[in-house]
Structures are given as C-alpha cells and as structure tokens.
Image (cartoon, rainbow, N blue to C red; front, side, top):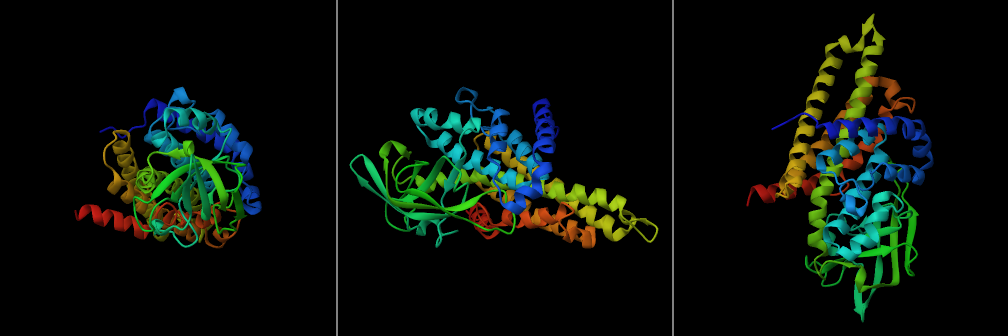
Length: 379
C-alpha cells in the first residue's frame, strides 16, 4: 500500500488548483446566479487534457487512471462543485460510455472531439416517470431497415441543451426487461432530436440540466453502441465508475466547506478568543476532518480496483453513499460554524450547502446505493 500522491498526481493537483483559482473562482457567483454553463471554460479544460482524463493518448486524451481522475474532480469541486459535476458527467458518463462500448470506428469518430473539449457530452437514462426504476422507461426505438425511429423524452440530463453528443439509453424491447434497452449516440442537429427547458435548481446552478425530446427521430444503426438489448447492462457498468465521480465531487465539496470553516474559525473572535478555541467548534472540525479522511480512503480503494479492472460494484456504491452523505453533513456544519454569515452569499459555505444535496440523489440515490450494497453482501 502507498498512501502518498505519485509525482504525476501531485503535478496534476497543483495544475488544476492553479487553473481553478484563475479561471473559476472569480466567476462562481456570476455563473451560479445567472445559471450559466461557461462553455469557453470547458474548451480551456480540454486544452489541459481534463475533458478526456480517462481517454488513451492515441484518441486525444490524457491516458490517466481513476486516482488522477478523483484528484481532478475533487480539486475543481473544492472551488465550484457545478464545474466539477459537469467535468465528471462529461468524462465518466458520455465519453466513457463510447470509450468502453464503442467500436474502433465509433471511438475515432466521437472521442477526439469530446476529449479536446471541442464537444461537450451528455448521457441520458432518467425519464419523468422513471428515476430509480430505469427499466420502466417509456422512450422507445423501433427498427426500420438500417435506421431506428425514436420517440419519447429524457429528464434531468446534464448538458441537455449544450451538448453536441449525447449517449442515450432507449427501450428496444419489453418494458421492465433488463435486456430490453439499447444505447445510442445522438448528435446535435439530428432532425427530431431537441432539448427542453433548463431546470431551475437549488444548487449546481452553473451545471446545465435539461430535458431531451425525440419526435420520430431517425438515427442510423451505426450509432448503436454494443449489441441490441445491452443498454441497461452497459449503464450499470458505467455507473460503477460514475459513483466514483460523485464520490470525488462530494469529497471536493466537503474539503472546500471544511477548509473555509477552519479558516473562519481562526479569524472569528467571540468572548475575547478565536471560536476555534471553543470545544464546541473544535469538535465539529475534528469530526469533519475525520469523515473527510475516511471518505477519501474509501474512494481511492474503489479507484484502485477500477484501475485493476476488478469487480468494484459494492465498493463504488459504498464510496458514493458515504461521501455524498458525508458532504451534506460537513456543509451543514460549515454553515453552523459560520453562524449568520454562513447563511449569506458573501461566504462560500452557503453555496457548498446548496450544492451538496444533489450528491445524495444523482447517479443513484443513497437508498439505491444501499440496495446495491445489501444485495452484494448478502449473495
């Protein structure tokens, strides 16, 4: 075991830290309040290799592993979780789905532009009536010759409006059949493929969330990823890695909130001394620091297994569940430590508090993680 950052990880962490301070921190509240997805920022991230983190160098990516991936998402999320969420969704869902299940021809067609940040990616599984119950989806694809005709809609899709490429899971068989769904790639501008309204969210407001609509949308069979009927199985494998993403996002939120609280507690004086000297505050900080450390270790163990191509479904669910619940708790305590100031937009913990809650919902709720964990440990 080695718990130290490698030289590469240390360099990457410093690089993304410097980038975030210069290109993200000055605009956090502007983007948040206007709900702006800062597309030019993702072009810059692409130039640095952070939009194709897991993509091999021969396809235009950085060729890095999951330890580095966690580091990048975490460092961005310490500054602005909205941007961390968008980077995570682009890398681990859309890009990684094509990378994992696409043919060589499909990879060469779509991956380089995604890895460079020239194209932003989206990934669609959820519908209005089907959140955790993905098998109950109503969006259908019917084969007509060399084409598929798609009808229906998807909801809560990150980058649903701005994405040039979307990987979408659609029902091609019977409802409720885990082998009745198939993954397809949709390109922006395809007739019958449109976006709906942007969701007006509590937090993560700079990360665009919107609907996708399919109205007699015809796409060629060459846009199908993998075999017909493998879409749900593919999705579960992609979500294994996606849970590490949300864990890394959660870790970044928690660290950002904790570091802001630590700093504030040393500067804020009451009754003639810094509030950090009061046991009530010191113990809060001790709990926060310990739970952050535990979450980080759990995440990197999941990343180790993922890099080794070993089974990690249980551990990824554990790491996502623990990190997401932990970050909500830490963000809540951060606001409490700041007192009245923590309830204002003048201090960063207000935004961490709003952003944190999504982590317990997106890419599988806490309750779904418990289903996954319990089923696996009871086998």
